[in-house]
Image 1 (cartoon, rainbow, N blue to C red):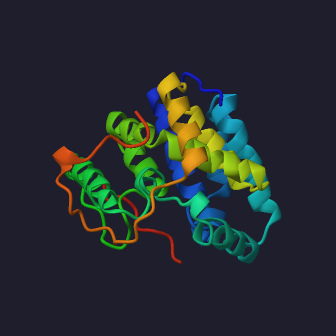
Image 2 (cartoon, rainbow, N blue to C red):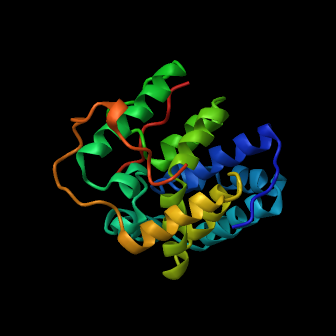
Image 3 (spheres, helix red, strand yellow):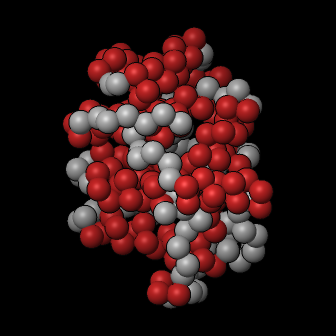
Length: 223
């Protein structure tokens, strides 16, 4: 995946657009197509071109078709889960603590997330990063880079239009390092951990290992 240097203002605009485009498609998406197209046109090609392709797909599709495709893709296939901690921790006890880390990051920035959405939803993380918290946002995204890469590759394999949005997201992140490539290969080979015990954080954070990587629209991150 090609990454690109991008100034902070354009990167924030990209994250805001990506947050909307990777979320559940609704009337808000259709109302903002012109604005989103204008944003995509200002971005470097590795970031903006994939967004433009996805927007062209949106314009050719009805809202009903988009919503049905979204549900079939992200709600019915765990391999495309928009919840970042799933890829590193699966449905295990450790995932509960990982979710707590996201909440603590938001709280430290003075933000409170609605209880209607888990804090590791990709839309929420992107909007958080776009709202003046780029450093923490990039850290959260890169900690779960393996999951993002795995999702992106799977979306490409199935020919999903949302692969373009993930391409754009990944282009805003630092280039992959060797350790990250190893984490992706391990995740492809082994998949997320399995242990159906819910999400309660039973393990104190200090004992939690590092992540695998160093139908309504969800509530927005409050400003």
